[in-house]
Length: 280
Length: 241
Image 1 (cartoon, each protein chain N blue to C red):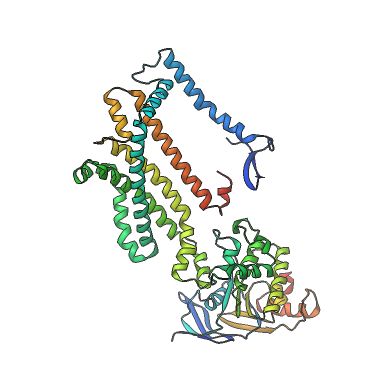
Image 2 (cartoon, chains in turn orange, red):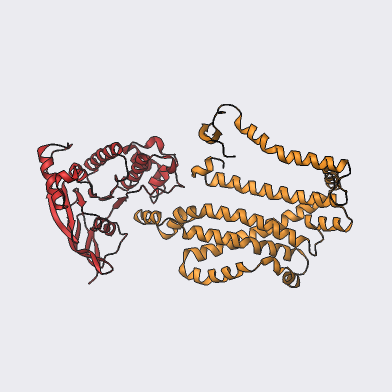
């Protein structure tokens, strides 16, 4: 993908358009080309299953997986487990955003805060937090708490680290301007430092969402009685690889959707950045 | 000995000392900027021009001396220094009371001929437009003292000429005092009614520029003042040509 491109204004927005095909439908054609490989793989997979090359116990055919998904939808099981998983991630991520933001503000906006908060977080962050699962089960039992806590713990660090770096990275020249404009400390934070740190915060949020789903997978595969992870572990006991594949697909979709949501948020919140206009 | 800052209509600096390490960049400097006057501050690089301006802007704290300042001051920097996440008018209005901020910003932007871009993002502005937005941000505060820190240095030659004319017109209309830090002798002669040259931490030369406005390069009086200023900077007119 290194063909020559030029920036062309389309409907008020800048788009990168391959040279030589401006004015024609260049973007859909590129999208079509990019879809060839995944679709080809799916077709090959289905063909290999149909002729018996892939044993269904190891790798069910795409159509079998689709049928399993339809059954799970019809019975309401998929929706139920999905709702449970979504709730865990939402609550855990919400706690992480709140904690990470508060800690980053405390550490980022005052030296005292940095001395009190940063060393502890830098130490805690080096710990592979998934190793805390046994401890969390002893502390919190096997209900919702250990799962939500695992998500919250893992997702706090990227929020904290990125927002802290963003606050400290605010351009000192703009901080000087704020002082010549007579802005108070709270005005400086609101108009200069926080907007300057917003791109970093959103990067942190994207990492945090990835880690949140990862933590959930781990949390739900140990001592759970609901959620997508439980659905998959339960399917394993009955050798239902098709249901396991449905679970994987759901996780992948959830990751994709949440990543797109943050990208959308970035486009709105960072509309001032020329890079955001390119759609990257 | 310490620094003392007071308020009055005329800007005054007396006995200002500022050291960076062992070297005194400003060494007992005295300067007066009467209300309504336009002073160009020249000097070789490293002579402390910007340090003096930053002291007057409240961005740098000198060790010794007396600084008397008028109540309202505004700064235009060499780079536009706009907040990229605020639209042009929000940048201009930043720090104003909110009630009529937009109207006042629009008025200031109209004065710098940028009102058509008031809702634009700063990163979409050209260099000259961004610098005019910076100028509007200073003007909107109705300053008694306008501090200009090489505001045209990063602009192309044509844009620079237009900006200089704009600043001359705005100064004539508003009648604030202005301190222009520059290394451009022609610019000083074009705009200021006094040129002062920083030498060894003090004002080495103070030159009254009594040319009629609007000023033209190339008149004999202009040329004479030019070579005098260049001489005090250690250059001949031939070297600077």
